[in-house]
Length: 215
Image (cartoon, rainbow, N blue to C red; front, top):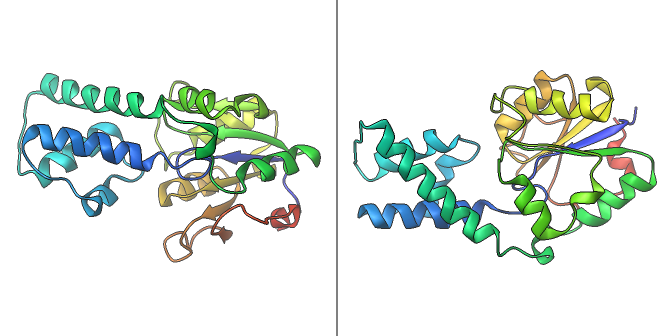
């Protein structure tokens, strides 16, 4: 069986924006007076902005009770992140991605973005591939974060394709769980040991053919 549509997470699948999140969190930590390492940053993957802030504060041994102060810190981090991604270029599309997207289009398979990021449009504009997608569902259109399947179900709805006819590409455990809950096939992009619950796992999109979608 070959799916009628493919839904792509953005961060870590189409582009690697994790480094910009890290730079922004590190900058915040430094401003608060402590170091935040790349190892610490691993704990923030796939975690919401406010939950990420709590982890960061715990790394620095800080306790902030005032919700307004926490909101201000999270906003400051996001503003720095937006500043970084606003400098992105087409060169930052991950290897093989663009060719694979065109291959899907050539074979009549619909494609969508399914991302919790509220900065999705900024990133897609900067890397110049927004118009290739048949639907874009981002953090401005959903209320529940992965592993809730809302983002993928909404993408299927916008593509006018049944969930069972969709295949998701994900780099995070929470995203794989969300795709499974949506009743979709899922291909992990990254480490097979971490993404073991995916139907298939690839290291990258380089040299991937349409047969990848044969289940």
